[in-house]
Image (cartoon, rainbow, N blue to C red; front, side):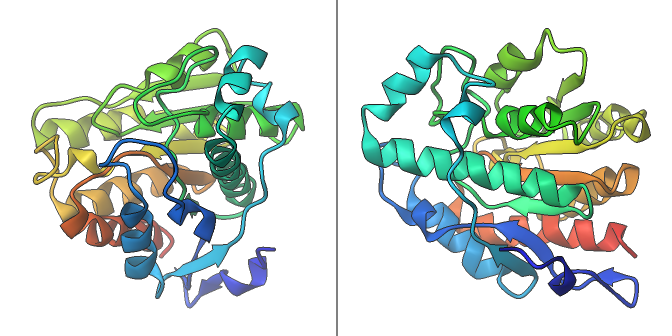
Length: 264
């Protein structure tokens, strides 16, 4: 279990950032080649000096049903390995969201989730980790509302499908072709951040200049995390995309340092 005393402020700086993570995420389950276990391995190796790793539980079926249909869940359950790891990923998102009620967190999880809708999935996603985490908090009465910021290269169509009719959740997807425009859109999306009980960031690092997106620099991830956490410290981030393995670790380190800087 995560010990909140191990990652509190030290001389005004968050000593370590709570990171839900499991070695289950290194499983070579059925997926496409680019969404492979090496992504999780590279990141956890890079961030170990600033991360306080904590083992998430499996998400319950009742939690899945808050966001997905029985038929979708059954279709994933056919592959027992995928079903188990996907439930662990959703459990990691829930843990990160619960931690964020006290301090910022980052969920190092896979498979990603923002392309999984209420009754469909795709894009390497099986269950919508972000939506599940927020619906669990809402169902427990732990929050009244939430803001989702999606900075992945690809549109979070699954997240939008699930939350679009829920007045308690605001979904904002960031899309731009130039890095300056991208950063300005993040800033604009946070203009009313203090009116939400929690912010969830779906962080795709495929916007990186050497990744598919070709937009952001490593230091930009630090700035994005700093902006989000400064706008509202009740923030959690979950891993979505990011496939340029050579620099993926340093990009996530940059993001986590942005969280730390916001806590000065």
